[in-house]
Length: 218
Image (cartoon, rainbow, N blue to C red; front, side, top):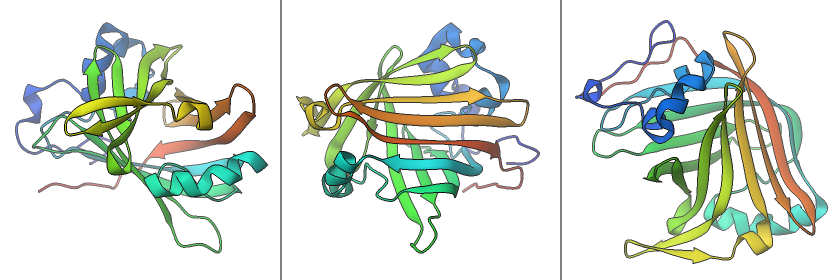
């Protein structure tokens, strides 16, 4: 990427950005900074990195008890902290229509913690975000006041190509994620995981910029 623009290889110019395909006309309702870092196209080697600070990464006492289960699937951040540096690497792959995330948290006193996942569109504005072992979270994606918003629609386990609903939400509750423009160069992000009976179990929030000096091609 040069001057905030994604470098592309392969035939990416023949495809809409993944999230433009997901949102349809609502894509144009997103803030420019959000569109810029979600403009990766499928079947390409597009890559972009955003860098920022998580003002808070928190979990409740009950949430702490769930961390070992989440760790198995690579789905929960196990530490608490404030002002935690983080880089988030986004890339697509020339062989498929997926987007891959690698969120790298730099907690003091710990090795960098990687939260990796990949996402695929399943129907209209619905996607699934997968972590380890084929476990995925179905999400409905909308554009709201310039922000990209993800709302939980339940968990699945992909077995032999079949998506089997699993009641993980009874344990972990429901997720909400938003990425919202702050100004021309910055956007905010927050995630909450709330249980209907146990309250908020996990949350983190931060502010990011697109790194202007990152490029990757193959």
